Image (tube, rainbow, N blue to C red; front, side):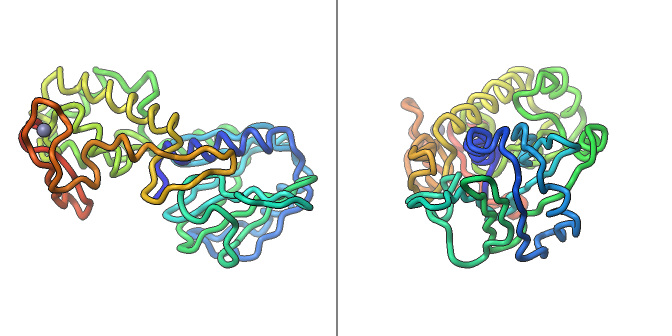
Amino acid sequence: MPELPEVEVVRQSLNKKIKQKKVKKVIVKNRNLRFKIPKNFSVYLKNQIITKVDRFSKYLIFHLSENGYFLLHLGMSGTVHLVKTNKKNLITNTSFYNSPVLPKKHNHVEIIFENFKIVYNDPRRFGFMEIIKNTLLLKKRFSHLGPEPFDTNFDLSYLVSSFKKKKKNIKNFLLDQKFISGIGNIYASEILFLSKINPNKRVHLLKKRDCKNILIYSKKILLKAIKEGGSTIRNFKSSSGKVGNFQKNLNVYGREGLNCKLSLCSGIIKKKIISNRSTFFCKTCQK
Ligand SMILES: [Zn+2]
């Protein structure tokens, strides 16, 4: 499942390739994604120039020249492929997960430009696309989501006031998109490891120092993951030819039964299911 860093990697490659390019045609082969693709989707996009590809949390935001935006959420298994016309396409995937080349099945939408097209592939169809008519509606669309870790509003006073008197554990808090946007399961375990906080710890018990660590490491880990091209279990090159290899830097996620990577710690990494999600941590150094 793509998390914020993976979506950011897709955004960067798309922004590079389709910025200032005009949409010639849109072919919707299957409208039945998580939400139905609006009926006017093709007409709305046709002849518009994509001025910029932005992102908020795990949403890709395509800015359109005439009016508005369209959003793309990759869901559980969505990938965007960049296919050149009249050229060999060795690698088309703009991300590091799933197939490096365009699969034969599950290609639901094609957006066609002058010399190339982008194809949306999604076997499980949890992704979706929608049209947002103006900036006000865009703001409203995201009003249910908390700040990203990079946001200036995500600061010490925000954490202290959010945690006050709350009995929920910190792992669930980090996954709560109303509290913070864009932290998924892998990164939540990693942030708590570097912050030396036990994932089961109730947030009202966290000290100021713990909050500071969460602020520092959530930024640090996500930035590093973006720089490394996101993490993925399977590993291959993206359309830019770079390999996503953040998984080499994972300290706890997927390391059950292995030694803690902290040099002075003799702990063993444990796996525990918290609210149906696998959580990895070291009992010895995470208190
Ligand atoms: Zn440890």
